[in-house]
Image 1 (spheres, rainbow, N blue to C red):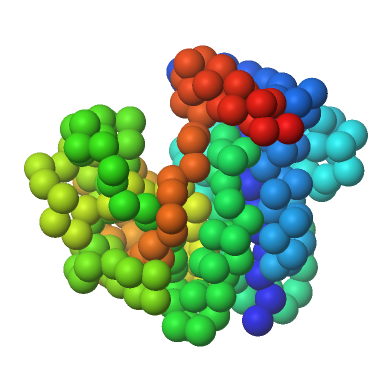
Image 2: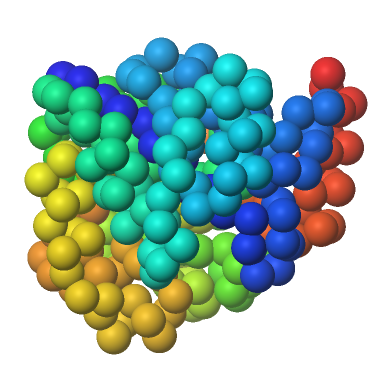
Length: 243
């Protein structure tokens, strides 16, 4: 089976504008992400963006980028437009990597791809165990509740995704990476945004609200995502120290 990785990215993030081009170890965040994606060696990698500056940065750093419309409501819509523009034949799976997680583990990308192929799942994602109980109430950390307890061999179905959790029962820290079959991605973007999705600001709820199952694989740790300036400075410090 053939997988294509598409990374949606834009300059106008609400909490940290210009985030994709912030530097860590003298490289932009978006370039660090696409290099990780390339290192996973599961398929071709493209960045999908509405901003020419991001296209220029990615191209300058040896990657490929597609300029998309500025009118997309979600990253998934942006990915679908990019897929149509790339026009590569024989693609079976599309991997959607977040452009603000330069610390994503390459093995986790590979693992999700393998589980999608072996289970012939329509849509899959990743999650990690919650270590700090305070995270249950942190609205910035999205949680996934699965139908069955997760272990490293499971690819259990998601029951729902929430921002505020009451307890730890089958509740995990969701990691914003998705893999879809091409047909599922097409079906997803053709659906209207659901009430649930709009209220919770979680587009994956649109899939569940329309009976598209999402399978969840367990990974060791959740990468540090960059939502705020504090997140950026903390991750920059860690990654530059390791380098």
